[in-house]
Image (tube, rainbow, N blue to C red):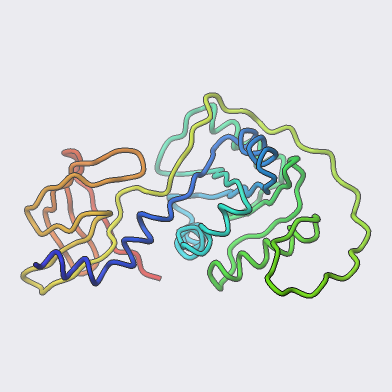
Length: 251
């Protein structure tokens, strides 16, 4: 019964967490190839995923939201160009990311570069408040200027467009072989419920109390999780026999 009550209160959160995972490439050239086949734009997210606060806000406020997921599936091929400090990258991946950063003159994180399906830059932005609606609207402006926009129902006929600007030469993207794909789906604390003496934690797809163990689904594999302690905004767990602390995200 306690799990049923908790799941009912957290249903929207769980649907968001499990139903809107997006495919993020780490090979930019593979993403451009896919975009060309599907007539989509390419979004490059230059990020410091494990240390950059504004990058984490952009991820939680925009990239993890179902509204952006719907927009991205229709319009974008996504690429994460990561520069972490607390985890290591494959040397070939790090070299490819460094070359991309140099090619686009990246000086801070997060920086978002939008490319057309030929690999030509059509837009540049970063974190902005307003969630996915504001972010998607800015991307729409770049797509419209590049001659590609989403159809709007009952829209007025568009005005005659300005003459297109000279197109820059497409960049040759550094290749990473084999091209890996990452998903936003690591272990995450989604919610804490119950009284002080009988707390329950929602970790990805499982509701657990102190001392309970379950197989928790992540983006890559199932992880055996045992809850050791539940605090006001964090939990201490054993994940595949390794100690870990998960903190509750706040927006």
